[in-house]
Each structure stands twice: as C-alpha cells, then as structure tokens.
Amino acid sequence: MTPRARLTVCCIKSSAEAALAIAHGADALALVAEMLSGPGPIPDPLNAEICRAVPLPVATFLLSSRIYPDAVEDHLRSTRCNTLQLRDLPHNPARTYAHLRRTRPHVKLVQVYQLQDELSLGETA
Image (tube, rainbow, N blue to C red):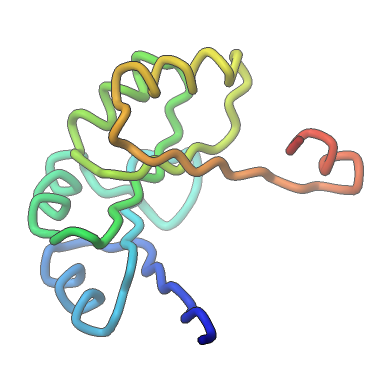
C-alpha cells in the first residue's frame, strides 16, 4: 500500500477558510502569527479562534517568530495551536526545546532550517 501525501494549507485567515481546507482534505493548517516578513500576520486572538474550530486529528501549525523560551510558550498558550513551527533559534535552541518539552509536552515541534549553501547542511545535524 502506497502512503498518501499529507496536505498542509498555509496562511489560514479565518474559521471559514479552515473549514474549507479541511473539507478538501487538509491534514494540517498553518496559521501565520507576527513575523519579520511575509504577507501579513493574523492576530493571536483570531488564531486561537481558528484553532478552537479545528477538529483533531488536523494539525494546527503556529508559525512564530519568537525565539526566547518563555515568549514561545506564551505564544503557544495564547493561540492554542497543537504544533509549533520554529524558525531560527539563535539563543540556545536546546534550552528552548527543553523548556517546551517540559511546559508543553503535547505540542509537536517542527524545526525549519534555512539552507543558504552546502555549509548550511552541517547546521541541521
């Protein structure tokens, strides 16, 4: 049996968009919070409203630009997403991961690596 591809729909902006994506087979929804760049963030209260409307097992990814452990945890708490997509963690990523594993053990963590060149590959190990 061939495993099916999993579908993530990004930049969900409302509960109606979330419902439409799920109705069309989305396995995960990405909710963009405050970011350093991009098409525009969704306010945390709206992200929390969307997350409350999403049934399990659909994953709700929080795309957060916060980097300090307490700030990341607060962001998860305020949005209620069940998955965190982390970008660059310049300040002791091991400490951030340990903190989140202790305080938010139910949240899945997904690390994004920005590959610039072949030297960047060593940073992912």
